[in-house]
Length: 138
Image 1 (cartoon, rainbow, N blue to C red):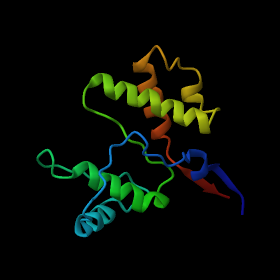
Image 2: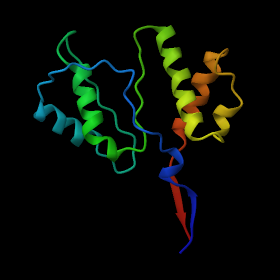
Image 3: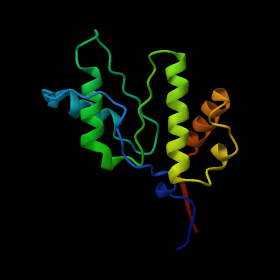
């Protein structure tokens, strides 16, 4: 049996939440973490979970706890700051740098000027992320 295609390892990026604020004493919310795990468990299809609620309720820390607990289930976990348009663009630029550091041949990103054209960077990162993992078996 010969496998042809793109493998998960081709999209693996080291786990890092260095830009994410974290509180010292997070009270684990096991029920919510388990519900997120069930929601995001995938058969290969795209899954989305939305955390919503008033500010200060612990949404960010719940997402951080989930990412840390289940990081081995994913090939990459990225944190985007969506506070405003500029912070989102900067998050995409940082993401592009992180991907290029581990995958210098990422064709969608290698030709983009990360420091100058944020719209192209965002498009290139989204294109890289949208490539579906496919393994054809012959």
